[in-house]
Amino acid sequence: MNVAKSKILEVLRSRGQNDRADWVDRTMPDEIDTAKNSGLLSLLKLDAADLTDEPDRQAG
Image 1 (cartoon, rainbow, N blue to C red):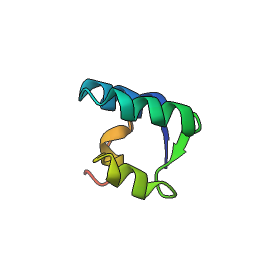
Image 2: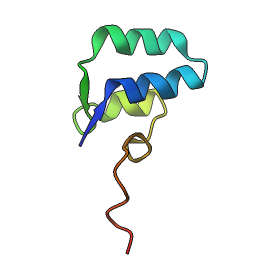
Image 3: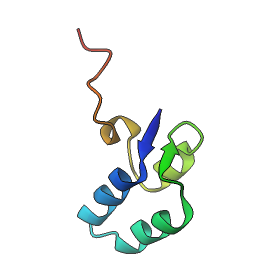
Image 4: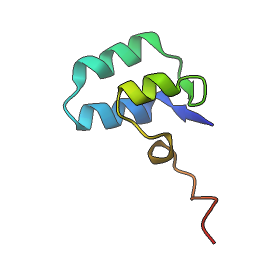
């Protein structure tokens, strides 16, 4: 699954983690592959499921 970099930046900035957001903005592409970058998401304490606007496919 891909996530827009802007969504990650939004979450980080809402937490007051502006330095981390700036680093992500400089180094990552506009679309971030959550599988390939799972370590980065873990480091930033981000859950890929929380970053998507798609409904939960397991529900129902």
